[in-house]
Length: 134
Image (cartoon, rainbow, N blue to C red; front, side, top):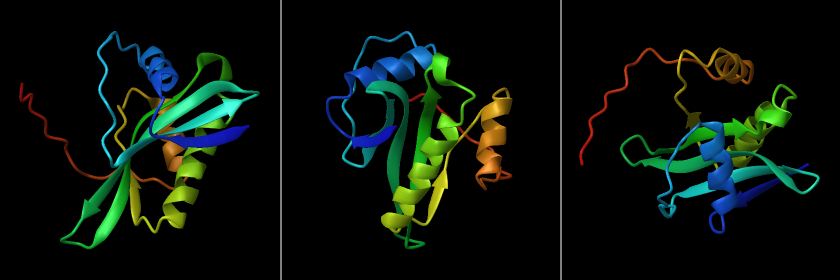
C-alpha cells in the first residue's frame, strides 16, 4: 500500500472519482496551484483518492485543508482504506503546519460521517450557502 501526492497526470484519478460519485461529465479542468490529489495504490492498482485544497486565512493567520471527493473503489470499501487516507492527510497537515482540515458530507452518507467522527472530526453548526454564477 502506497500513498502519492500528485498534481499532474491525474486522468486515472479523475476517472476513479467520477465513477465513485456517479458524475457523468467528460469535460476536464486543470488543478489550481493550491490543489493536489492524494491517491492510494494497493499492489500497483489505484483504489482510492481525494482532493486537497489549501486554504489560507490571512485575517486569522491560519491555513487549512479543504478535503473533497473522498472515495475508495467499490471492491476495496469497508476495509479501513478511507480512514487510512484521512489519517495520511492529517499526517501531511501536521508536517506542513496546517491548522485545520474541513470537508462537507451529505447526511445520507451515514458510513462516511461515522468515519469522519471516528478520526476526531466534528460536525459544525453552520449552513452552507450556494449560488450558481454561470
